[in-house]
Image 1 (cartoon, rainbow, N blue to C red):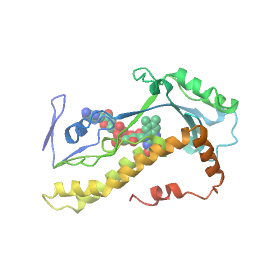
Image 2: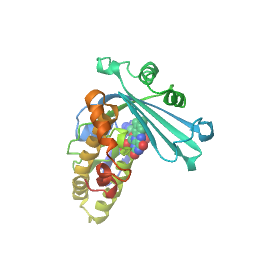
Image 3: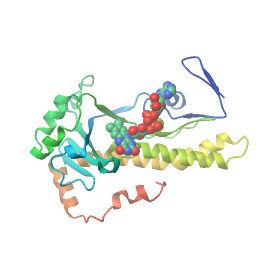
Image 4: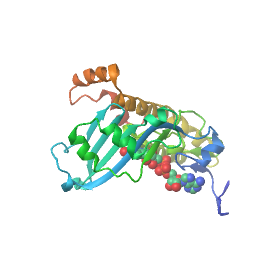
Length: 251
Ligand SMILES: Cc1cc2nc3c(=O)[nH]c(=O)nc-3n(C[C@H](O)[C@H](O)[C@H](O)COP(=O)(O)OP(=O)(O)OC[C@H]3O[C@@H](n4cnc5c(N)ncnc54)[C@H](O)[C@@H]3O)c2cc1C
């Protein structure tokens, strides 16, 4: 098998693994299901030295502030010396059909204008010069054709609400290396098919669960009241919704 690149270079190998991300060119060839699905959600990020954080009382653990059409995640990195701040809004412009120019800092500020002074203060830790318009795809089978397969976001792009997209890519690599190692000479096709089969249900469950987590974070009205009622009944040790996720790499 020979892969020819746009710059004219050629690479010969036994198989082609398309690990080329959300807008995968290899996926176009293998599945051809068009561009990814825009969620209409936009994320802003910023990392600040922890000693610049004014109110440090919450941050022994990850903190998620949630509200209608927004959430804000904060956690410490690099041995606690810096804090990562990730703010996400559900774009009203996108919902109105303004698909070309949605999710600017105006929408971020507008959504967070209804949050508490404490949260608004911490929003200043987020940069507004760059944002991420979030996308995923409806999960489908068929990432493998002959000696070509997909891995990571190319196969199953996932909203970050479970923080699992990169983890899934790593899990894919572990399973693929296992099926390839178990394959004999000339059994590449079977190894790639076995890889997809082993990953398939989890690669559906994680993206769909991530969407649901986004709905839970961003909801308003009666859904918000129900969410708050159910969360209030939980104990800190109760992780049943995500036990399956962290227990192993099966669905
Ligand atoms: C705001 C945000 C927050 C996130 N937070 C988390 C998190 O907390 N935890 C988590 O696990 N995941 C998170 N993710 C998801 C994670 O970033 C992705 O799932 C992960 O990067 C996917 O890895 P990948 O290797 O499949 O694709 P990518 O990281 O996109 O890598 C694909 C690579 O292929 C290259 N490429 C693309 N096209 C071509 C081409 N035609 N030729 C040659 N090279 C090409 C690209 O340059 C790139 O280097 C987050 C995503 C976003 C947007």
